Image (tube, rainbow, N blue to C red; front, side, top):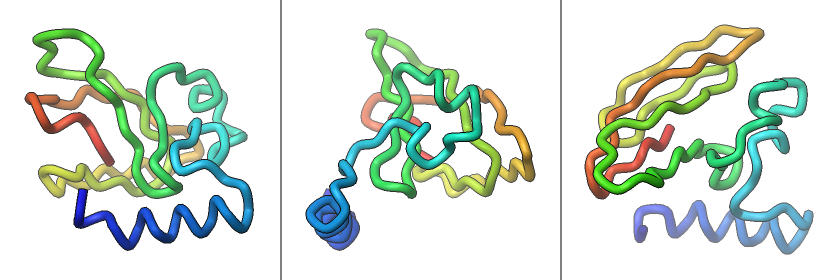
Length: 102
């Protein structure tokens, strides 16, 4: 949480200046991606972090969608390249305390 202090401050300034929320639906930054527009659970924290929350008790893996582009898994550093124009569904381990964040 503390490691993101500068990023959160930047997002708060952006919210104040432009009215953008800190937590965003993916369609906001991927308006041409039909799958991103239809996502119901995933969200972006700012523009840079795609989050797929774990909603089921005991769940150890989550299915999530990543739009086209370059993504880095927050916890492992694993890189995912999706050159586009389409994104892809993938499965990601989700141990307790480490939800999928790219």
